[in-house]
Image 1 (cartoon, helix red, strand yellow):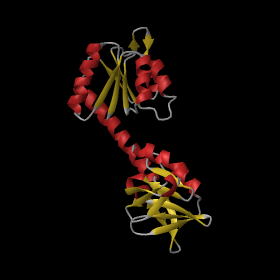
Image 2 (cartoon, rainbow, N blue to C red):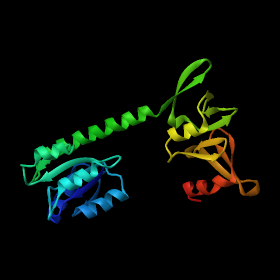
Image 3 (cartoon, rainbow, N blue to C red):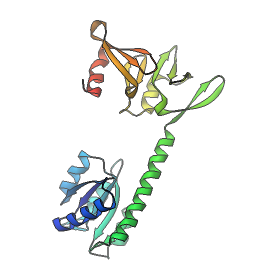
Image 4 (cartoon, rainbow, N blue to C red):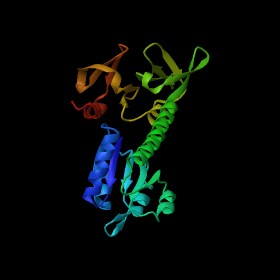
Length: 236
């Protein structure tokens, strides 16, 4: 997990970091000592979990929790504090748990397992939504996002190309573009969307355009107006 610890006491941050690494060496951990530093971290990275102390000097960890709950994809929150009287307010801020200092390792592990299960269920739900229905041989077939190599616009419809076959869809190219993840799919021509993970080779073409050779042996043109975006995406 990618974890942020927000606590104004360095020793408390060090102790929690040690325990989190003990739970899993794969945990990536950053630290912040106040709300401003925490906001800066949250703008730079996507965190799975944030530990928040209630008293951050003259600031309140509740203020940070309220700010985080306004985010489009807020991280999970666990309050970690020496004070037990704020538990009700903490859970009103959608906290996953409320831990008291000094930390009890077994109690911390139970809390982390709970959060991990929540995250895994959420990811499974998101992945299940990345399945699309298309027509094939007078049937409705479910196509997984990762199976799509490219999509071609043709005569008002679209064709989805996968490793084994192709499927016709009544949806427009623009509609498909709005549904697919932007970090994986890119429009490279007025008639084509491609899965950038399925590009095998790229070659220069005429008039400063490019041609892509895909994993299914398709040759797809990249129009001049889309060359810059493709180069930026692939960093070449």
